[in-house]
Length: 135
Figure 1 (cartoon, rainbow, N blue to C red):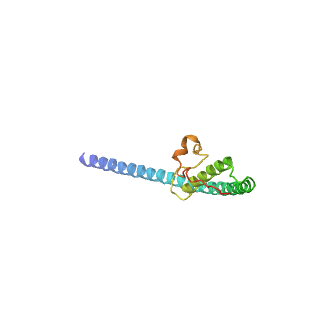
Figure 2: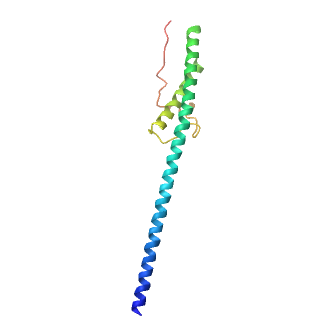
Figure 3: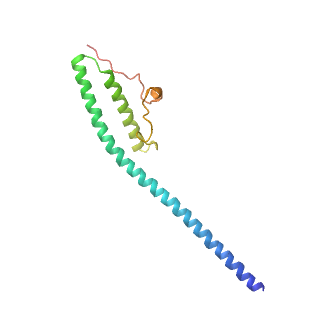
């Protein structure tokens, strides 16, 4: 009787060890698949933001050239273009922070446009950095 009971206990312990190993394997596989998912997601967003950044840099350059045209013609910079280029510059700054792994926060359009009047004082580039043109 004790011999049979010992065999049953051994089988139960062996079954528990097998269940424990399967649970650990499942946990490891789920963590591994989550890691792979995060990695592929980061790669996808990196490529996407590189393309968006490239196009945005061209828009930024075009606006700078138009601003020089205003400066040559009127002798003053256009305030609307100045504000627009500031927002584009801050967007590029956020994008570069994400692409260089300085931040895990994805830039616009995955979060609100952070450069409105409410967040003006929170921006890392200050309003005090202005350019004055002499006549």
